Image (cartoon, rainbow, N blue to C red):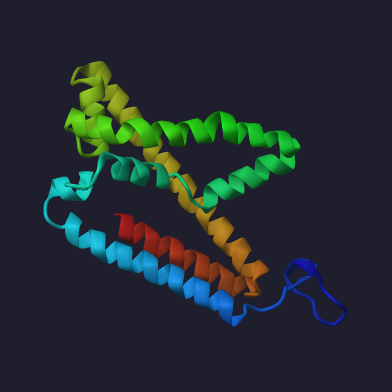
Amino acid sequence: CIPSPPGRPGPAGYAHSSPMQFIDWLIVVVFFLIVVGSGLLFSRKSAESSKSYFLGAENKWWMLAASGASTNFSINGTVWNLAILMVLGMKSFWVTLVWWMPNAVFLMVYSGIWIRRCGGMTSAELNKIRFGVGTGAKWARTSFAFMITLFSVASLCMSYIIIHKFAMVFGLPSGNAHGLALGIVAITSVYVL
């Protein structure tokens, strides 16, 4: 965004950059067609059985690992990286190298094979295999469920804030941006549940 010229204020004193051109819309449409097409293709495969749904049935181990690693990429991660960039400066890049990249590489290399070999399909089953069935294991599974619920609620809240801010930057009035953000978070929440 650039500072707004006199007489044309944008949100928070900024004007819009140039509107999207035909090539921009074409890239967005092609991207969504590829995503929706891939989703339809793989949804048919995943509907065959619960094993197909959770483990990708006949897919290669690296496809399962890539799927697991890609679920960690979202707008929340981008905003987190920008936030630490603003706080720490360029040295924040090392946070990404030290934590994020090894995590993604580990998921890509080992998790697909490990999940297939251990026989668990859901997070609950994987935790039961990992921790066992004793009292301590029940506490571990309960604390995991609590933390994952807390993280999910926090992610939804952060997503609302991010969508609202982005919508305002792209020119929606605050009320419309609020409705858009609330609608997207609500649809996502219902879809996930």
